[in-house]
Amino acid sequence: MEKKNIDWSNIGFGYMKTDKRYVSLYKDGKWDGGTLTEDDKITISECAGVLQYAQTIFEGLKAYTTEDGRIVTFRPDMNASRMADSARRLEMPVFPEDRFVEAVAMTVKANAAYVPPYGSGATLYLRPYMFGSNPVIGVKPADEYQFRVFCTPVGPYFKGGAKPITIKVSDFDRAAPHGTGHIKAGLNYAMSLHAIVTAHEEGYDENMYLDPATRTKVEETGGANFLFITKDNKVVTPKSDSILPSITRRSLVHVAKEYLGLEVEEREVLFDEVKDFAECGLCGTAAVISPVGKIVDHGKEICFPSGMEDMGPVTKKLYETLTGIQMGKIEAPKGWLKEIM
Ligand SMILES: *Cc1c(COP(=O)(O)O)cnc(C)c1O
Image (cartoon, rainbow, N blue to C red; front, side):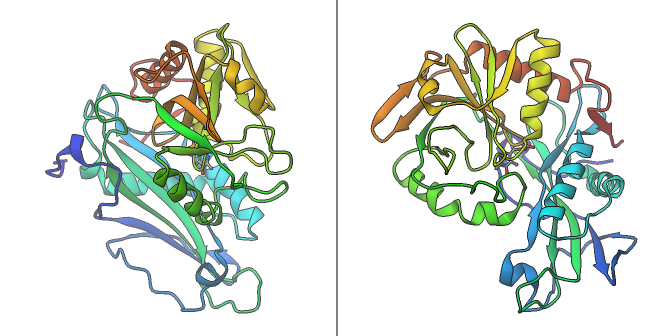
């Protein structure tokens, strides 16, 4: 298969139309067989549930080329089950988990020419999503839905090395107690846009959200979970019902325990403790881990000893081990790499 003529290391994180996408329609209480299409446009009613009441959920995962030339995805079954959880919370029909994994594989295979080569740092980002498509004017769940998967090649997340970022403690809240913070729904992102635009205007890279009920505990950023390292090399990650359960974070916890022999604490993390940690990172599919060098709380700075030049040593070890597993350089736990071709 001939690769597209793309300057892989310079593509950034943006949308590029690829050849094929997967579509399955839900109507009269059932999903159809699903198909690949070249049509990148969607025609739906002006009154569609998604347009009026934001009934939409999504996932994000990557396909890439391993050192030995296979094309794989990383734990797509975890995305399938998380999307099923999201669907149930928004009263949408679940797209069967095995079919989700198959749809992802079909999309990657059909766009294999867009999967960046090993060593380029670039990957093929996959976006499964689902939305209510029939007219809904009285507030209720839609009766018809579309499940889709498209993909787009994305460049290396860190051009020229992973420089630590600076984040601010936000005055806005991301998720209400007993709300929708634990599911991957578009609505959680719509309400975060004002907060992130504001943070960027003030010169920060990201927002740290605290728990909205007491504003004393660390939750997450707009799109990544926190991981802290204590001065005696323990991994600490916040536990909360309103955090999105990051697959990267859960994988890093396994790597910390089983590959690196580190102690891990998944528990509530008070903001007051943050100043005592040695390292801090943000975990998500896009970057795996972005190191955080500084957190600013209304003018008060917390500067981690790992500094503003490099990833902290333990964070780096975690990063290298997980990306090594993903790229096929380190043996993966059973079932983590799903081989596409
Ligand atoms: C997607 C997402 C993450 C990261 O999850 P991964 O499965 O690791 O990509 C973290 N926080 C939020 C709010 C998210 O939407």
